[in-house]
Image (cartoon, rainbow over the protein chains, first blue to last red):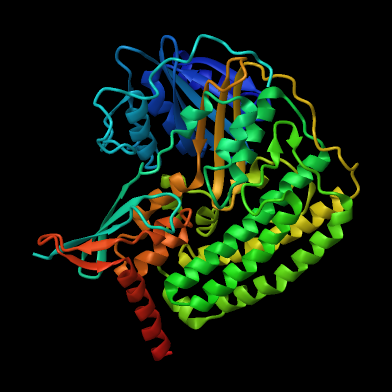
Length: 156
Length: 397
């Protein structure tokens, strides 16, 4: 596949995955965040890697008021875009399909997110601890707390 | 049944900045599997940053890596400037680029030295580290520091390079070039180094894509990715340079890419100094009042590959979430491909080849017999085995 026309990318995604795409946010300077239904993650990630030839950069988790958000960042190295897939997970049962069988690069970061946020990656080949190796309490996740609500002043 | 020996590399060693543990599962001389354990030095920097103001975060991320201490502030600045929609001045762009490229030279020199040491070329080690000092002197002149330069801020840089200093800096850099020539010749033309590194630690294009490896590790396998060109930032689109690639896929190709990249860096610095002298002195900062809510994605090409920062702001004065992806995080995972099937004598140089923030290879600890638990060899022994192999090759040639 040649160069991607980013003006039509939102429409192309909606055409291919219709109701799985919940929203497309085009940020300035070659950055796009695509909100998806979490069940469709493997399919869309596969489309990004196989069809669009994106490179997987990393995933990042975040605790929100209602649960968790997980972002999978992909890079289009030919045009310098970063396209991120955003899936929202509920607080009671944070689960999402693992990408580690699709791309090895996702293996470690999913283990790390599991350890820090308690998000479970279904079908991950080895969902053991990556960074704390047993010296952290079970079922206690250091990054799982939602962000503070006492806002500080916005001045730098 | 063959006996499997576990050789743990690490986790602690006085020379290393980040402890990690590799377990090499060996049958005789051959490495059959590798496991990785980390977190010995997990400092929770992402979490710490949530309690720092956006300006303070620079000083924290600068200390993520001791060798490439500008790559993280660079990526973070890119993320924040995207978030705050700030365009920095040309002079600030040139200064940023000069710092980043100087850092690439000293980081690659450090790598060449250590790679030489692991192969048994201690002269290369001494030379490379001696000549690296010349680059650090330039840093000291420009920033006042040999490392952790504290040059970056949102909207520009903290210190200017006075035009009057440019000729001195150029002279200092001219002294580095013949030394790099010397090292390049010593490494690329040596038949024993060819024999030790060619065809060793192969990473195919498919492996690179699967493990999403970046930087010289990817470029040595013929994958021309470089954030400086692909997602241009700072002064890189304003100067002429090219992305160095090699097709060898082995340790030699990685050395080749790094050595030749130093010439590109020197050319970039020369052009930047030249162009910078034509801009207004002191015009290095665009005022930034506050950071709006939103997400910022910043990237920068560190000596080891792409650094990625994701910052989320809620309109307050500190990040809600800050994700840092260092290049070694993806590069180290490739050991599973490059080490398996190779001999123990080659393991040190293969691990060194991705430049895993170096310390990783320095943390050879002890080898225990898998069954008796008795210690059989230590890190020095492994380096000795590597030296021995080089000496045997020298005798044959």
